[in-house]
Image 1 (cartoon, rainbow, N blue to C red):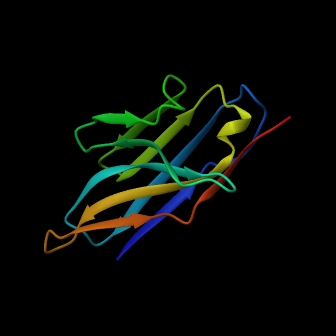
Image 2 (image 1 turned 120 degrees about the horizontal axis):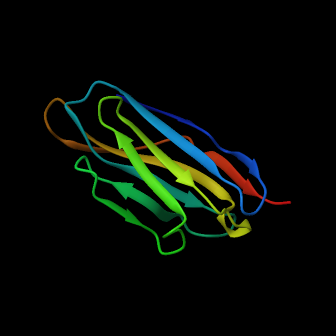
Amino acid sequence: QVQLLESGGGLVQPGGSLRLSCAASGIFSSVDEMGWYRQAPGKQREMVAMITRGDNARYGNAVKGRFTILRDNAKNTVYLQMNNLKPEDTAVYYCNVGVRDLSFKFIENWGQGTQVTVAL
């Protein structure tokens, strides 16, 4: 079983910054891709940013140039640095982590979500 501990959400003014973090713990062989999705009210969940174990990152078009994803493999932790935040970034952000269990079976895991609100 894998536990994901998210932190870092909150309220910020437009143009401000926030950093999200998500730490994976539990019993598994390895951690594959890690990252973040978000879901705004009335909208579908969308990919924000994902990063492989080898630090290959991909971003959703809406956040390119403003958000940066990083990971610490030693800590099984992924970070999302969000700069120049806009009101349209307001959403619940979900950590997404793929792991290999002790049988090397791939298992996808989701965090509980953390609210990010961008407003005056």
